[in-house]
Length: 195
Image 1: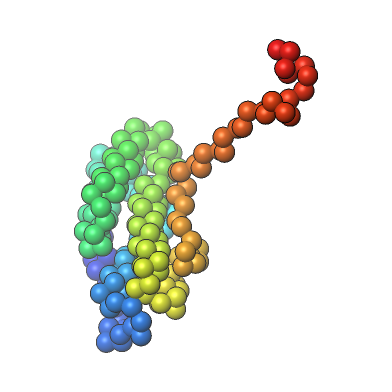
Image 2: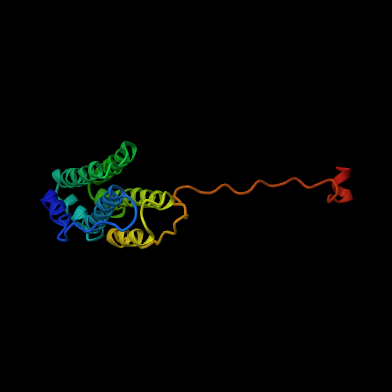
């Protein structure tokens, strides 16, 4: 059922005959494929986590959580293969779903915790960061135009506009504070010098 949803949502009713005015058509086609996948992952995460299909499936004793995890992994790993998601990011998706499965197997408390731990949203964010890094790289390398980049962002459902030279900042990476300079001997007070 989930695979049917994936195939249905990824059909492109528009013709792919239009070619870009600027840039490499291969890069643009690859970015379009990633953008469509990100858009699908937005819809899938909304269905499974926001609307609670994952939680409802988890209420079924025994197979609910396992079935939900298998369905999500099937869809997400197939999509990851289609967009050349690196292996470590695919492993991260498997790990988040493994944690979700482990949490969900605990009776009652697991069902409540399963509602708060949203593995499909985390997987969607992995796809989104992958798309944004590829888009930023293509804009820096000038292989796509700014108009194409905006169109791709709209296609992906991305709500954060990127500027050509704007780096992607991971939410998990915290910048280091600047080093604290020791006081100079000239600016030190007499009491500091006595010590």
